[in-house]
Image (cartoon, rainbow, N blue to C red; front, side, top):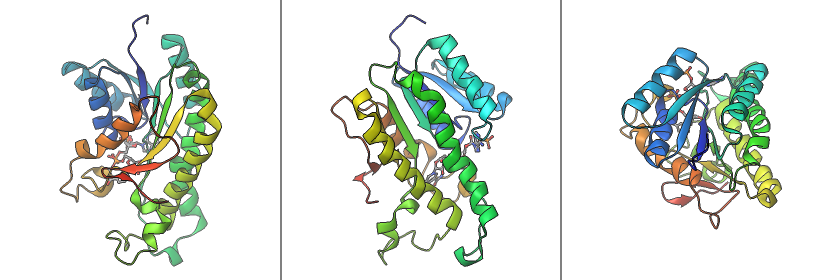
Length: 242
Ligand SMILES: NC(=O)c1ccc[n+]([C@@H]2O[C@H](COP(=O)([O-])OP(=O)(O)OC[C@H]3O[C@@H](n4cnc5c(N)ncnc54)[C@H](OP(=O)(O)O)[C@@H]3O)[C@@H](O)[C@H]2O)c1
């Protein structure tokens, strides 16, 4: 492709906040690759986005499958030669009981997608992001990751104590900081986004906040100018403490 459109890959872009990120990036003139583990759902999402004027294609990618991730990176390299924006949005929240009752197997399962999946995809896409004039990586985190907030007795989500999920997002925050420092000299900004508590399949649609509202912060971080921040966790109202 020889035009100047930015190219974004959004993992888990076929539904929920990821789909809304794809939609809003498309509205901002970005060519969007909808990452989806189910190719039919990915194709349907791309079709919907294109029907409303977007410029979307789907890419099959289960983030837990190393071969699929490698194949997806090869696909992007062949078709576009670079990547400008990577949104590590795919995530899982599995049924969890009290932290004292959660075992290593459950935690490992959550980390397989929320942590190792992000490492796998980012490693595979980094050579393509390095070819961008200003690469951006956005990791979908959560205020539930914040150790400082959990230490505040007034934290409104302080009773959501999921050992696997919360700590996976804390680990993701740590990855964000390490990558941000390492990739600064390559001009790649890496930030984490808290979308807020949104009505999606993950939350059983138990929130009055629309996924589209949750997409705003990750979209803003995807489109940061060169003098924008890197290595932070941000929500609607700005920085969130680690
Ligand atoms: N909703 C909230 O209130 C909230 C709050 C804070 C943070 N977040 C974070 O925001 C992100 C999006 O969540 P959401 O609420 O939009 O959830 P969602 O509607 O359940 O969507 C999750 C997406 O991730 C995909 N996914 C899961 N495992 C995958 C894998 N192994 N490989 C590829 N894709 C995979 C799902 O694919 P399928 O469609 O195939 O299942 C789906 O597209 C997550 O990282 C979540 O932790 C959400």
